[in-house]
Image (cartoon, rainbow, N blue to C red):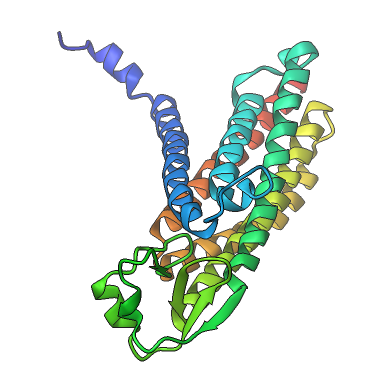
Length: 281
C-alpha cells in the first residue's frame, strides 16, 4: 500500500533525514570496530607468538579497545546533548552515565598506552641477514606489509625481498624491508598523535557539557572553544589524509567518520545552548 503524501512528507522531513544520516554514521563506526578486531586478532597472533594475557592485551587489541570505548563515549554525548532532557540528567541516571563515562575514559587512555607500546614493538628491530629469503617459505615466517598487516611469507613475497636489507621485529618471526618498516613506524606515530588529539578535544567537549548543565556556558566561551577545537580538528584531518596516503583505507575511513560524528555532537551542543538561552529569555 502506497504511503499517503502526508506520511511520506513526514518521513522526508529534513530533521528525520538528518537523524537517519547521523545514526547511519554511528552504525558504520560500530561496524568499523568489528573490522579493527579482525585486524588486531590477525596481527596479534603473529606479534605475540607466546600468547596474549592481561598484561599485553591492550597492545594486541589497541584499535579495537579504543574504537569500542569511543563509540560508547560518543553515544553518551549524543544522549546528553540531544536525547535526554536536562531535568532528567540527575539522580541515578546521572551517576549511571558517569560510571559508564569513567569506564570509557579508562579504556581510551589504556588504548592510548597501547598505541605507544605498539610503537616500541615495531621499532624494536634487529638486522636480519639471509642469502635467500625464499628459504623461509613454509617455515612460519611473515613479512611486514603495513602496521598490523603481516601476511605469510610466500614464494611471490620472498622474491620481492631478494637483495634488500631486511630487519626482524624482535621476538617474532616477522621480517621487513627498511622501506616497509619506515611506513609502519609512520603509521604508529600517526596513531599516537591521533589518539592524543582526540583526548584533548573530548576534554574540551566535557567542559562545555559541564558548563551547559551548570548554566555557565557563554557565547564567548563557545567562540573561543570553537577556535581551539578547530585547530585540533584540522590536526585530525591531517592524520586522516596521511592514513590515506599511506594506503591504510580502514584508518582513513574510520577517521573521516569520527570527524563527521563529532561534528554532530558540536551541532548538538550549539543547539542545546541556543534552546537553553531561548527558554531563559
